[in-house]
Each structure stands twice: as C-alpha cells, then as structure tokens.
Length: 316
Image (cartoon, rainbow, N blue to C red; front, side, top):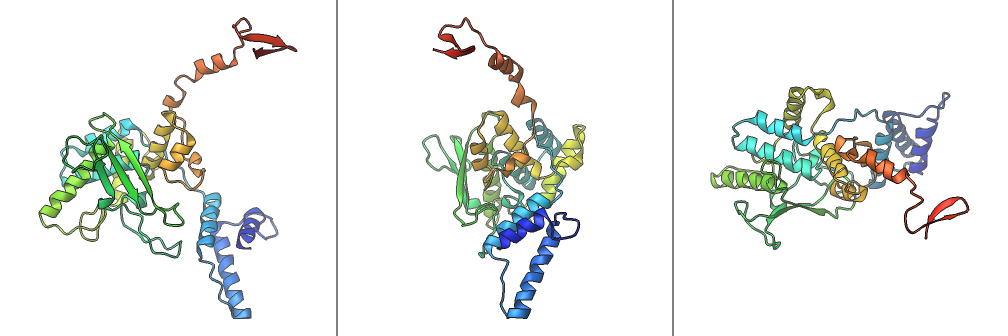
C-alpha cells in the first residue's frame, strides 16, 4: 500500500494541479498517515521499516534535482599526485584512498568520514571499510604483508554497503595495473603500511582503513578539495567535481575499457541499473566508432558465403 501511495504521489501528487510531489511533501504525507493511524485507531504505524526505506530511496532518486558530477580521469589523478608534492603519512593515506576509490568504485561512506551509522535495514551498520578487510595476495593467492614485493592483487571485503539490504557483504578484487603511480595494489599497500607505522608508534587508531585517530578518518571534504583543486588547475569547473567523481570516473573507465554493464554494476555494488545515469561519454569509448559503423552498415554482396533471397542478402 505504501508503494502504491508513493506511486500516486509521484504521478499525480493528489492535488488540483495534478503535479507530482517532491520528496519532502511525500515524507510529510507519510508522517500525517502515521499520525492519523495513531489518533483514530490507536495503531502505531512504523513507516520507517526496511521496505519503506527502499521506497524512499527510489522516490528521492526520481524526484530530486541532483546535480550530476563529472568523472575523474587518469590525467586528473596524476595532477592530484603532482599537487600533493612531498607527502607525509596522512597525505600518503589520503592519496592511497583516492586511488582505491577510483579503482573500486567506492562510495564516500565506504572510505572516508565522518563515519555514519546506517539504520535503514533495522540493524545499525557502518559501511566504511575496515583495515583488516583489505587483503594483499601474491600471484598464487597467498596473503602477503603490506611490505611484500611480490604482491599481485588486493581484495576488499565490504561487510555491508548502501545497496546491500540484507547485510550479505561482497568481496572485490583488483590486480596490478602495471602503472607505478596508479595501481590499486600499490595504493592498498601504502595505506596498510601507514597504518602499521602508526600502530608501531602507539598511535590509537579506529578500525577503518582511513582512520587517523581513534575516532576520526580521512574526511570526504578533504578528498573533494584536492579533486576540485586539480580540476581548477586543468581548466575545468570545480563545481562539476566532488568526491563522488571518483566513483563516476571508475565506472566511465570500465565502460571505455569495454567492460559490460553487469561487470560495472557488480564492481560498483549497485543494487540496480541506476549507475547508467552517472556514466559520461569519453573519447576512449568511441575511438573506433566511425570505422565500426562503416563496417557494420556496409553490405558486400560478393562476399563468399552470401546469397540473395527475396531481395535481401543472407549468409548461406
């Protein structure tokens, strides 16, 4: 019933103008429905259950005027590294987390703070990746230390994420990129080494990969600042870029590399195909588009194995 009511609010709005309601109006109407049940029937209507939260997220997505951000590209990543200059440990942790965010298509809540608790499923969950869930392996799949020179892959175990409604979790693995600067394995090793150094110095740290103290982590605002600074330096609009641009950039890079929508959806931990609204057309995606279009639209009747049947060219 709640879903049907949400559909009515989204399509007609239940008003004279027959215009759809914004999310805030819909949320207020649901609060009024709950109050009416309590006042008239003395029944407590808990409309903050997991099913309703899922409907709410969909309503927000369709009725919010979100300003879509532009993707971070590899030249922009290199510019960020250049701007960081000589890095201390916290800057090294920041840079490593930026690279991981790009390759693993992470949401801000999965890497940076302030860490919040998600109560939408009825169970308190923090989605931020924990340090012990970042595992470095060699070419045989054996776990190795962060300082190992034979590291071949890194996997991140996400105990939960925004799209995981049942708390099932997911494990995503990346292999070495063979780029000395932009490599998920090298980035993970750097983050873990910084953490190990701090712990050896008796620094109290939280459980998260980007923890810098017992309570604090690298903040997403700091990530956004370096991204905006790099965008400005490259003549791009800083307003079009944010920390979410890393996730969009990773998805665009996978698309340009020819990976399927399913791979992108699984890598990005999307629960639906909504990620398609974030992808942007990049030059790498259409490098051979013109030649492919000509080949695909050209009928060569003299090709062997082809025969003419009822005015159409068909393959024998």
